[in-house]
Length: 407
Image 1 (cartoon, rainbow, N blue to C red):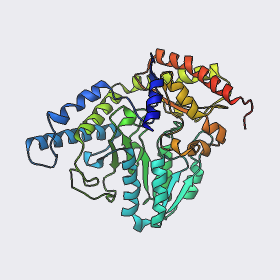
Image 2: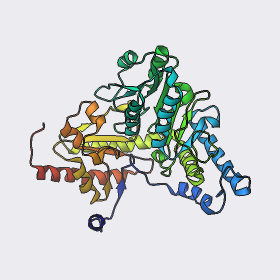
Image 3: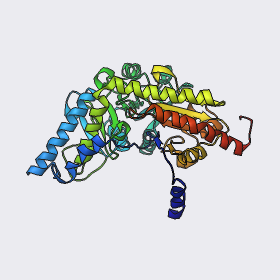
Image 4: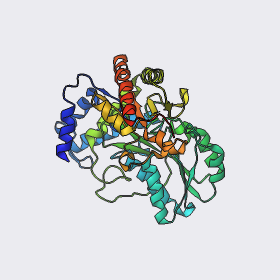
């Protein structure tokens, strides 16, 4: 296995330009974020934040400062409403399981959309083993939630509704405020959670304006370090711990907080919101140049998800008919262009993305999909290079397949 990987890496020798577009699955951490984290590994705040000595107090101050900054950016009232976790997956697990278990006396029905991220979908399905029922609300061909079906689905037995603010695969910006209003009108006791990881730093998002009870945000989705995320829990909402261990500064997540990563998360957040409109406009401009260029140079391509302002500004998910997605990622990698085929959560299952299936894509279309996400650091030259190598890669694979039909 290792030898195979080494051979693959050797095949990449001689690459003269690299363009990284796989920002759904991991990101390059900007130097400013790395520089902000480094002192916290060995020079200051390296202590346990619960202990009464200088390194401990420094760590506590750093964590509280970061919590205050992120809380302010999402619109939380008090910093105690924010709990740091080791990532988006853990935050979503805490939100769903913690809220379901703490409020099971109110009902045992959970409602999600058909295109929730895997770390919501699978947790909801896991809760069925504990006696909960799960209802999945369908979406239309662009991934928008069917609000009428949501209204029909939520009832007095509903304990929790979880709808992502922006779909991580196809970029659909959901009408969260309208969904919350429907849920609260149908059942005021039902809690509403949203995974806002793909909204944070890209579309306006405020927990108070949306009236959500719980919200997940992720560090690496905004070019911060991997291994840290956060869950907002509105004051007064009951959530049970789902792990036991050493008590830290947070009541909902045990263990010693990772101060350097939390500091990095806060710095990445600061940079993302430093010039929010300019950052978003640049991402959108690069995204549109990429998508428009692909459609101008290739036939038999499909954009997955909506166009315009109802799509996240960084997201480009395109199906290339008669072209296997995994083969295309390899072909592009050999040219220094790094993309993903579907989401990282599902690509090794050799099954089409559940999101693309839910919006009505055929298996052949889903298997030929490529996900690319732009950032504020991409340049016109980067996108031009991608548009130079991608059409040739697609046509080469189509030539190997030798098919002219679309099933």
